[in-house]
Length: 304
Image: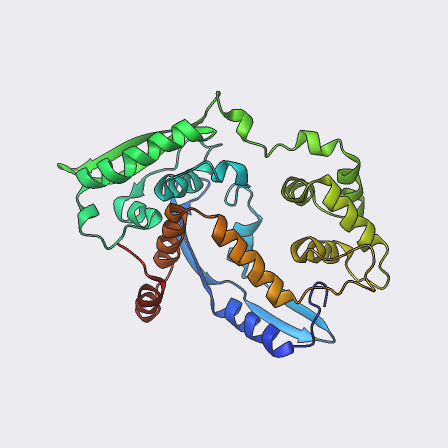
């Protein structure tokens, strides 16, 4: 297995079962501006045969994952600038519509779910939702990020029922958007990555996250290995697991599970209390099973 240095097949099987049982749900606009809702298991199937792990997404989910407009690459340095979890959630849900200029109309129930405040009686009143969530979040996004949002509402009678956000680039902070990667494309390490078969987007993402020196060292390590089926996959594992020292005989590769836990804990420590609270609310909003929601609220200390 590329990047899986263990004979513990039971753990791998358990992880694959979990991915197959995980439900992905989307509620978005299609190319013609029509609302589209869908649900799918994260993986349609997975199998282990002859030391090879084979898996596939469902056709509908694969189409969404392949669409760059749906999963925009968001600069992590920009994410760290936010102090409000609601502002960060609003930015992440609006940024992928920057090329179309509008999110389209969202029902208020959907917007509350995106902000992680669904089920709160206090925010059922639009006046309070606007004062405590919408206005502060829009103000921080416009002040902090590379986009400018303008909220608009739709009423049925006197009650506000829908909201949308008009989006345009922030000319004063556009330099924060590092997704073009023009500088990285001229580097020697980028050229080596592309020659190895790494996609343009992934090459720029690795260089941005790890730096040229680290990526070059991992490239040297991977290119020197023999009998590797996929060098791109092995390089990805080397970067994620931070292994591949110059002397592999004296330095043992880290335990994949322990290394993954270490990275997760490190990411958690770097999140602010506001961001951690937003993470909990966002995860809770994605749970559709009542028992699972109750269990998470009981053990994760979620606050309404």
